[in-house]
Length: 162
Length: 162
Image 1 (cartoon, each protein chain N blue to C red):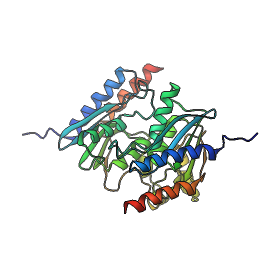
Image 2 (tube, each protein chain N blue to C red; image 1 turned 90 degrees about the horizontal axis):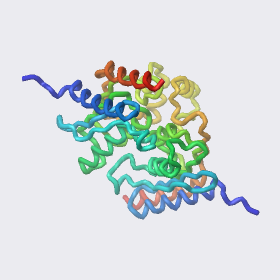
Image 3 (cartoon, chains in turn cyan, brown; image 1 turned 90 degrees about the vertical axis):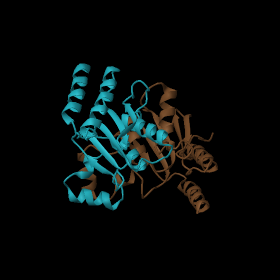
Image 4 (cartoon, chains in turn yellow, green; image 1 turned 135 degrees about the horizontal axis):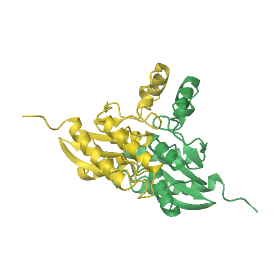
């Protein structure tokens, strides 16, 4: 029997959410939250439709997942998101104490995670000492899952905008 | 004639919001958004009541202010908040392009602003180069306004909890 509940499987679902955002003229980013191999929340970027800069896919997915679970925290859950979370979303993930974050494409400009894994040991040390790493120390991070697909969607979107 | 619309005046309104949070058993943090000397949004922390870690005073105030204005951005607006914003809220304020942030008490543990004004020039340089400063480059920041009042509320809250 094949193991179907892989990171690719759930990232594919997040990419479907990103495609839904694309259709609405929103920057195509999608997310799902998974608990015990079950999707408990799905969301896509809605900043234009809601006229709300906080309506990123991750923020909505966190709120929906905690609503579903009836608790404030997402321990034991995994967030799959097509683009590296920004600082706002990374900060929200910290508060959620989520167990794992899997993202697709990196965001070198506004990504809130990669800055904290930069090569400069001084930078990393300073941030660790300030206890200000954006994610909870127990949160595991995996990047680059189906990154090409996520990047392609974003590139298509911005090419269409121009 | 006296100038009544000072930072203290609006921070006092944010403190009233914090007191409302206190009454509900929420960590007492309050915020107001001001445009042209008028309060266009007020909010307080509701993470317990809404079972939602993203329901910080600032997040709700940003959403309410953009709803009021009918646009995504808060240029020309000032946020008054009783406690230094965390990274999530700082990230949201970045996206809002708000013109000014005035906070009361500093949050050395989870504050999202003070880490970026640390004395270590290497740290600051690294972050600037990554274009990852949490706030928009045009956002002005003032800290320490009525900090004692904000701190007292928080201390009373946590003393009661123990």
